[in-house]
Image (tube, rainbow, N blue to C red; front, side):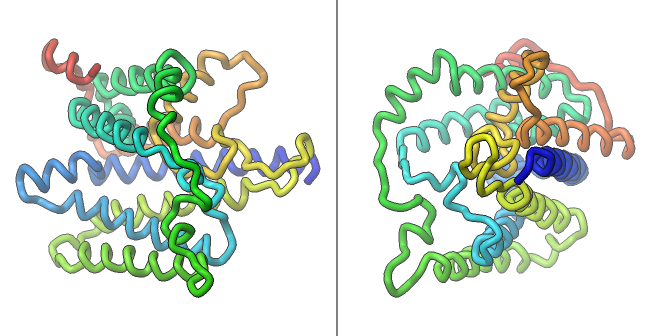
Amino acid sequence: MSNTDLATSSTLVVALSFALAFAFGMITQRTSFCTMGGVSDAVTFGDWTRLRQWLLAIAVAILGTSALAATGVIDTADSFYTSARFTPASYVIGGVLFGFGMVLAGGCGSRSLTRAGGGSLKSLVVILVLGIVAYITLRGALAVLRVNVLEAARFQLSTPQDLPSLLASATLTKSVLQVALALLFGGALLAFVLRDRAFRTFDNLLAGVGVGTIIVALWFVSGSIGYVPEHPSTLEEAYLRTNSGRMESLSFVAPVAYSLDYLMFFSDTSKVVTIGVVAVAGVLAGSAAYAVASGRFRWEGFRDTEDMANHLV
């Protein structure tokens, strides 16, 4: 691949990623798609609507991503999530902290971006603090604790840690298991979600199918369009415009940190716009566009000092 082709592919990856994130922001603003909101509604009010949206998105993402992998369009082994390095302490403690913070902040990173686009100044504060602490955890003071304590308890597996790789054998290959498990889990989720006739409204289907499809589409953009078998500078395979150097899709913690880093060091020519950076910008822009167009845009601040303290924590 020539440098000209490389530049063209990089531009296409960034443009498509922004467009998909923009659509994600519009959908989440319209439908109030939210992981924490779904769990909260189900536990507190017995209303499973938003949780079904979330499960539908998971089902679509499982089926779509597995289809791309089974047909050889992408290689899931090149994703950060399927690394052969298994770090249980990081997963458990990180997951607990994420869930705890999500409740106090009124939503996860994607929900905070969506709410900020709709005029929530307290969500904007959450995003800024989230990005700063994420960067400290990635490369700053907390990174020392993360690497030397949490990631010290790690296991090196002989295969990637996705289920098809772990369960593969001489009689059942990874590709066969990939399809079978996707149909099993994805199909079960679809059956559970769609059996409720009241759930099958336009907005609910838009939320689940739309978000799931966007996740799959970004795997395609990053893992297929952005894949370079041999980069002209390194002569090694590469994934264009990713912060991890591997195939990526939507996530909203590290990308917020990378977005702040890009803005603060904008004049540094070594800094480039990545999928994560444009995903953050796209969700903000998409949610703001829909909020303004639908008349939902409202400035919102903290109720009191305690509310601000909870969001900062």
